[in-house]
Image (tube, rainbow, N blue to C red; front, side, top):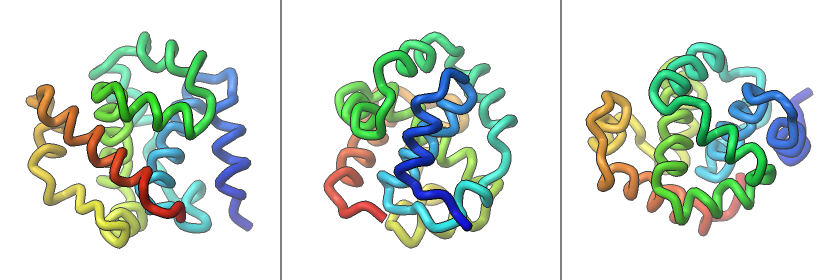
Length: 150
């Protein structure tokens, strides 16, 4: 039996554990992009490796601050709409998880997010991204927020 996505998001985003919060941000972003499918919470692996890469790239200050204020999917995605760095962190996380999860990659493609084909995402993932790529992530999430939820 898969988890109710709303309950899972509430539990992860409301967690006192920073890694659980990180997982919640990924799930909220996947859901916002329209790529959430039943059982997804059990299918996606690699959270520990992606978390290590995230900390190496961005540190933990931003996510620790976000955890205090952005404890619901709505607040998280609203913040990403006005802060391209948050948007870039969310999109980078989902894309990194998709690299190791064919089901997530396929679900993103079905939702109209072809992460592999986006040059902005390639620059984000290789560390050469700048403000244009971060804004692309914010625009991607803003467009997704206008779509019906999966």
